[in-house]
Structure formats: structure tokens, C-alpha cells
Image (tube, rainbow over all chains, first blue to last red; front, side, top):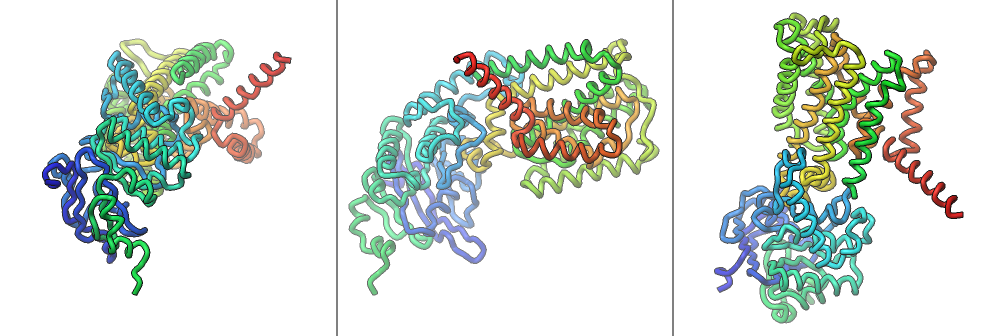
Length: 258
Length: 321
């Protein structure tokens, strides 16, 4: 059943960095409309998988299908135009831009107009810019940053920069959003709020979520499906309850007794 | 908000540019302003590349040179109308930038610096060595004055307004581009290419676009330069000239279109005023650069706006008392 409704299908992904095998034969699905978590100890290959999915690095072998379309060898910006965005583990907020401009950049291709439209400030320019700005303000409102819209992005405290990245990512109205450790560096209150925002992104905006995260409380509370990676291989898949009771997963995190 | 500030700055600039010749009536000052304005056209373009998109070009003077020489040769040796010569020069520069940009812009930071440096040197050597075509190191003389439809910009005052008009056009185009999705894409590329890609921005295409656009502005400046001085020599378009353009962009302030204008005006006119100190000229020049960068790391525009903010603050507080 799962194979038919999956929005994202990664099949048999191998990534070699020199002699190191970062991913060996990873198969990973994200169901449409679900929150699928990807967990595993440090160095398991979670971020590498995200990099491969979004086209930041090429896979050595394997294929990536999104909306039943093969995107294995397609450039990163085209994958984004197809409706796939991500956030970064180390914040990649655009400096030298205001909070609002950051979010507007997220809708780069949604409110399109040509270079000549900007140079001559045509009616099309004003119409699209207004639409873009309204959409960006709406998204800022969605994540709770509406008061900070005019600030330079780097003036935001860390936790709010995380929310800004979320707002920027959803401004282009993607179908899939991949979050790389969105709770890293957040305190427990901020993490709880983040969990609510992520749930709302799936619930209210209907965006499919792939979540790479170390905070198990967050993962267990909002995920529908969990895939566990260890040393570049999938060691378990299942619901949060399955995963919590899986002996191999416990060993991967805590080490085995013998 | 950003837009209104831009409109006010633009209005102030146009008034100042129109008024300068009434204040500085001396022919000598006018000629400095003309050269400053021509340089500013190139620096504003370079700033789009360097300050906004974060891509360096250490060979930018080559684009000045390609266009200056193309137009000079076509008009002087082949009798082309000046406007046609300048336009062909601009097109040729754009074409060269396009062809060089395709491989070069795949490189990053220092590698890109080296590649553009190499390109600049090649153009410089070419201008020096093809003596039958360019006149070689001793230069190319007898270039006609800029003229359009029979009107010759013979007086320096007329030429000044021509340059001021061209500079205004370049500033407006740049400001409009910066306040658009193109500007946001360039700034995004500057801070994180990967994040820009994730937003669906075709990073390479925007880099190539801004590289070609900055070459077009440089080429405009090159044409205006050749048809003003009526003489061009390779030394005006070598590495030192490229470096000077970068220093102007940095000194003026890279995060603003106005930075290029202020930087070019300041660094073109300053040596003229320092000339009276003779042997100390170079030392003073260096010293002023160092002091500016120490006290105004954001460049002259950043420094000036901080200063004006400070003064406004003082005045406002005093009024409150």
C-alpha cells in the first residue's frame, strides 16, 4: 500500500565519499500528507540522505522519485521548483536581508516576473511584488513572527531564526518540506512551539514533512512514521510505538550489552 | 519604506548632479567630475556583482578596455558613427563576459578571483601586443568626440550632462533590480548558495546574468571614456585599474548602489587634490584609505548614514530639552 501513495521514494541510495560509504542501499519513503521522521545516531547518514534528496550532493547509485517523477539527476533548484524544500541544520538565513525579504525569497518562483518588469517597474512588477509580500506576511503570521517582519534577519534570536527558515520554506507553497534538526539549539518551550508549528504545516497547509531530529520527545509526539538509520543503513521502520520497542534501535543508540 | 528612501536618495542625487557645474564652474573640476562619473558607472555595475551577489572579478577593467578599443577602432579607422561604435563595443563586452562567465562562474571565491585576474591580464596583453590594430603600449589616438544624430558633445559641460544622464540611468536600473526578485536572488546567492538553490533559484543563471550586466555597465563607461579623452592606452585597463575599481566599491560601501557612486567620486577626485603635496601624495592616499576602512568598515555610505543619524539624533534630543 505504502509504495503507491508515497510522495517521495528513494530507492537503494548509495553515497561514497572517497573510501567511506556514507549511505549503503538506503530505501526511504515519505507518505503524502504524513510526518515521516528520520532518526539515528550521529554520523548515521541522515543529513547525507537529505542532501541527496534535495540535490545538494549526487548519489553514487540509486534513484529518487518525487510525485512519481524521476528526479535522480535533476539540479537542486529544479527539485525545489517541483515542490520540494528543506531547512538546514546550521541555519542558512539570508544575511543582509530583512525578515520579510527572507520569506519573500522563498516564493522566488511562485510570483514570477521578468528582469525587464523590474527594471521598468511595470504593473506586473507591482502586482506580483504585492502578492509576494502578502503571502510572506501571511507565512510570518503562521509561524508567529509577524511583529518582527521589518528587522534585519540576523537580529532575530536563534530560536526565531529557526522559525524564519520555516516561514521561508513554506512561502513557495511546496508539497514536501524536509527539516534538518529544526529543534537543535532550542530550549524546551521553543521546541514545544516548534512541534506545534510543524504539525500545523502538515495539518493546515497539507504539506508532507520529513523530519530529521534528535529530540526524541518531539519525534515521538508528532511523527506518523519513523525510519531509523545507522551506519548508512536502514535498521528499522515503523510507527513511533514500534520504534520505541525495537531492540536493534535501542542498541544503536545505547550500544549493546555484550 | 525601502522604496521611499531610494526615491529620496535618487532625487537628491539628480539635483546634486544637475547643480554641480554651477558650483564648480572651473573646467578642471568639470573634467574630474566627468571622469568620476564615467568610473562610477563601472563601479556601480561591479558593485552589483561584488557587493550584492558576492562574486569577485579582478579583471573588470578589461570590459572597459574591450569596449573602449572596439569603439575607438571602429569609429576612427572605419568611420562608424560613434553611437554605433559604442553600442557594438558594449555588445562585444557582453558577449565576452558571457563566454568567460560560463566556465569562470562555476568557480568560487579565490579560484574565481584568479580566473578573472587571468582574463584581465590576457586582455591587457592583447591590447599591448596587437600593435597594428590597437597602437600597442603607446596607445590609440584621434578618437572622435561622442556625438548623436549630428550633435557633438563638444564642450565639457555638455559631456558632463551626458555622463550624468548615463550614470543616473545605471543607478535607476540597479536600484530597481535590487528591489525585486532578482535583487533578492543575488543577495541570497551571496549569503548561501545552497539555501538559494533550495528556494528554486537558478544560482548559475543569476550569477551569469549579473556578471554580464556588470560588464555591460563597464563597457558603457569604456565607450564614454574613449570618446571623451580621444585617447586610450592599455595601461588604463590593466590589473591596477581593475583593482582600483574594487577598492572604490569597497571604500564606497558594498551593500548599497550609492556606495559605488561615492567611492568612484571620492577616489577619482582625491588624488587630484592630493597632487599639491607632491612626494607625500601616495602616502596620504594610502593613509586616507586605511583610516576610512578603520573607522567606516561599512564604507563611506555606511559611515555617512551613521554620521547623519548621529547628528539627527543630537539635534532631536536637544530640541526635546
